[in-house]
Amino acid sequence: MFHFRKTIAGVTLVALLSQASPASAQRTSDSLATKQTKALLQNLFSHLGKGILLGHQDALAYGTTWKYQTGRSDIKDVTGDYPAVYGWELGHIEHGAAVNLDTVPFDKMRRYIEEGYERGGVITISWHSDNPLSGKSAWDVTPGAVTSVLPGGANHQKYIQYLSKVADFLASLKGKNGEAIPVLFRPYHEQSGNWFWWCQNVCTPDEYKALWRMTVTYLRDERQLHNLLYVYNTSEFKDGSSLVFSDRYPGDDIVDVVSLDSYDGGDSHTNKYFEQKADSGLAYVDSFALAHNKLPAFAEVGYEGIRNADWWLTNLKKVIAGKRISYMLFWRNAGYIGNATKLSYFTPYKGEKSVPQFRRFIKENHIILNKQAQKWKLYQEPQTNKHR
Ligand code: BMA
Image 1 (cartoon, helix red, strand yellow):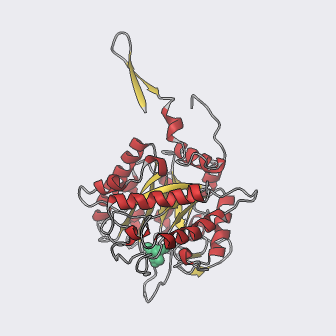
Image 2: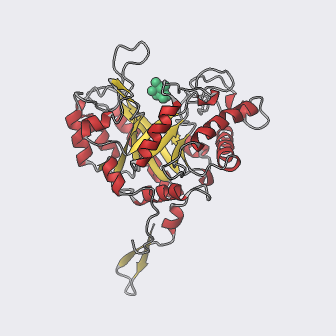
Image 3: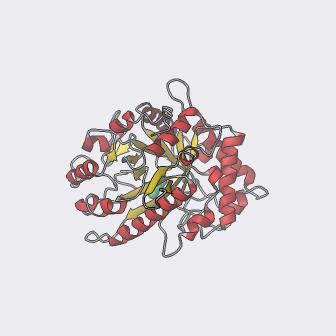
């Protein structure tokens, strides 16, 4: 925040950097957050504007054409360096399953998380929980699921069991010195969509907020997990519906990061639709973050199959320009999924056609990979420097 002061002559305006607000801007929503968790948020804040950390979902588990090869990552294959942010997914943990909905074993996932953290990377976790009312997938929008899990609802106890499985996993993530690994936890994501049981078409703003608060209260207070930063997330806004973002915002006391998911799927020559929706969505998230002292992020982005190799240097470059974005996470390189005949991927892999453009994009747009993130020492308490 800038303050302006007039000189006595009333001619010159002097901008003074406020010393009061940065400290509060960097406070974790959980006042008991571990020191690494607090440091992570502060450091991500202090590096805003210096570069965007690059993230990749399931980066260490598999790539477009391989699975479970020690030390491998598609990002590393094409850039020589690991991503700075690792995304992981808990779907099916609620049933006590050994593997997630994308067949990644949770034991392996834990080791990959520890590996990424030890390398100085950032961990973010999403959760496509099955619908607790119908028993079907996260994409089942049988109405009433959210009400049914709130206190007094028929599925409340069952859902607390779901949450307890999530808590067990999050509590099991430990660094070499036994410290809890900080996690950017992003539950109930893409709330402005109409495809998950927690989306805006099947629950009211109050129900959504109550679900969020119940979740945070359980993890933070009941289970005493203090390694979590909470990421509130939306999908794109249709005209004027940014209200769906503010109406459902759970509250400054239980959110640390505000974020957008936006994918390109448009016409391979223009990709205009993506440009517009991502541009306005990011601008909105950025201004909301500023107003609420939260960290802004691009929590999911990508163009499946990268049908236009210049996408990196044109469309994506355009939408991130001029925005404050802490990190940007590309979705998973799943390869062949289901009965698909086409490979599914969101980042280049060895031999993929857009590798040169991707490398240029990284070089020319201050995109941060692991080595740079290591230098930023994200888990170390920043030195206090009043005049910084
Ligand atoms: C989706 C797709 C699915 C996957 C889900 C959870 O966007 O990638 O294949 O099951 O995310 O990771």
